[in-house]
Length: 256
View 1 (cartoon, one colour):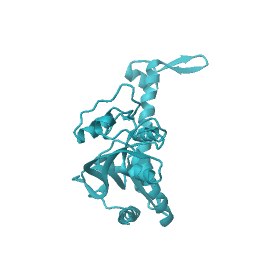
View 2 (cartoon, rainbow, N blue to C red):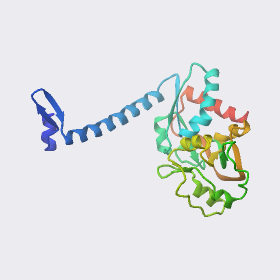
View 3 (cartoon, one colour):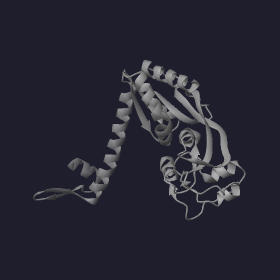
């Protein structure tokens, strides 16, 4: 520690008769080291998961993992109880992120030079609300734009918000100042389920709730972007036996 302090040119510890305490510089360094250690631990865990012989590691967004993938994992576990599935959920990732995972579910056009990809789901986005919310009078896009809309803050990741949704349908939209805002799609959807307002929903997360009467559509307008969710893996790396089993099972489940 003395050598580290000498190299930095600042004291990291305040030495007292009955112990030591961190200086402000030491406290700052400790926070940085903790972040680096956490990142290192996560990387080691992901790499270990990739190389487990009886496991498959899967990368997906939070919303897709919760609303679409999780129910399928229950069925997969029944069919293949000896294969462990490790799911890592994060909202912002790209093709290079797949290097530490067996497979992933990636949003886009399906064209990635470094990845093999199989189409899973189209992107279809529409407006929904709690069944008890009085929205019968909302019939046009102009009326919808004036309603209480639950907002999604997409500044930190790639996701459609109300401005983009209306833009696809030829309407210029700006959110009201009083609108509730959430930085996670799962949180925004939860707010809609609790009746806080009208929200955007992707078909993979809302179709079942609509069928059960747990949500209602608000207008018949929807945005079909032409993009979708793709099952992907690194092109120049052979998939493990477990990853191949999982891939084939998931693709077959989409056919049925």
